[in-house]
Amino acid sequence: MCTAQRIVRRTGAVGVVLGVLSALVGCGTDSDSDTLIVFAASSLVDAFAEIGAAFEEQNAGADVMITTGGSSALRAQIIDGAPAAVFASANASTMDAVVEAGDTAAQPEVFARNRLEVVAPAGNAGGVSGLSDLARSDLFVGLCAAGVPCGDLSRDVLGEAGVTPSVDTDEPDARALLSKIVDGELDVGLVYATDAASAVDDVVAFATGVDMTTPYLIAPLDGAADPELAAAFVDFVTGPVGRAVLSDKGFAAP
Amino acid sequence: MTTRRGTEERIPLLLGVLASLAIALVAIPLVGLLVRVPWSNLGSLLTSDVVLDALRLSLISSIAAAALSTVLGVPLAWLLARRRFRGRRVVRAAVTLPMVLPPVVGGAALLFALGRRGVVGEPLDAITGIVLPFSLAGVIVANTFVAMPFLVLTVEGALTNSDRGVEAAAASLGASPLRVFWKVTLPAIAPSLRAGMVLAWARALGEFGATVTFAGNLQGRTQTLPLAVFVSLENDRNAALAMSLVMVAVSFAVLLGLRDRWWNNR
Image (cartoon, rainbow over all chains, first blue to last red; front, side, top):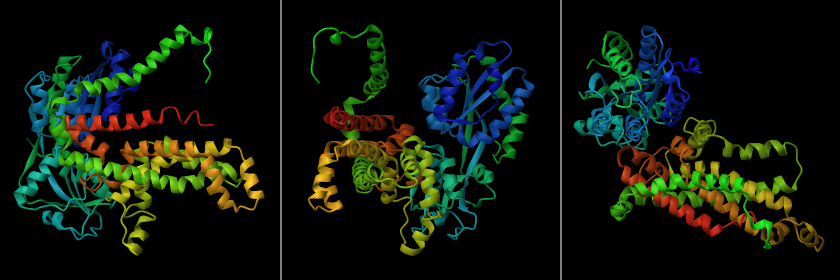
């Protein structure tokens, strides 16, 4: 039963349901295999898949299941009792809410940082060259919705630069926004540098010119089936292997 | 239905238990929602700009989608029920597909077809300047895409089962086929047509996946109630719960008003 559970990218509710089901069928109590459910912000999907695989190699029997989604959606699921062992959020406020709800087992740690980039589809038909182009009403402009970490950071960056964007859509998360830019449906948007790096052949990226980053925090959770394994995973992410993978994916050091 | 006394009034234990479980499965989540609704400041939550904009866009787009589904779907249902043509079964399967597809897939398909870089969308933009994504028109197209099958299936079923004797009589008296359709066929299936329109409207009102994928999400332009609920769940749960309550109340009132009309109209 548990051999089928390798690291799989799962998003949102489906991942939670699968996580709960696997806990119910008893994988967590199997002495040979120890399932660790990790909730991670969607921008961490590639990095955490690699880190999780490396962790499994070093910890025989550990089975890392990574569920990715918007930080705030994951936060809501954790507070509502989802059986996650570790939470990695893409900003401080979502982690603060989980801490306040009493769901963390240790002090959260900043393990990486991310910045935003102005991104246009390959070919750049709109002639985008920087942050000020987000104010152009002749372009189709997309942002992450307010309340989502990338959306809040986008508004801070635009506010700092004094640019009032001419927004055509507030996408529910960074990946949804990126795919609309890759497809050429949007002419320009603000996404994480790491997302831009993941689609390097399909987009052109420009610096925002604003020095603002978002911290990524990680903490073991109260509901972890195996608290030691959860703590070990957190140490692994903040340790040399985790840092190397994160830096490779375009994250800045904490 | 006639009522008879005796064995027919008894509910076998097994059926009663299973039916009660069925009711619980539907009712418990609704109770869960009602328990969480912030009743004390419901008024101020429901009169915020976000909610009023979303309510207005939801009403406009769902009614427009039901109307468009009717105008296009009734002729299609008639064709499927009354005419034999090559590929009829393929057409019927294709038309029902949006009921089965995950709406997100439908939205992506719409984007590839009607998006700014889509097969049809790009020439449409070049020739007419019309861009469907990120517009209210795009919301209506997405809603119609997912809602029309409900109307087509309902109306086609009624047409297949309706008595064609009166139509034949009208035709033999010299009425043109279009006049027969308008004056005889449509009035005969009116209850089913009404039920199909309401089902299509209800499906459009709850549409989320195809809309957010194809038309995006912008308050006052494309953000309907389901989209506003989803975005608010991220940062303002009370507003999300208040809007959910509105959707439940509106849908429940309409379905209650319909009663079991769409089963018992033949």
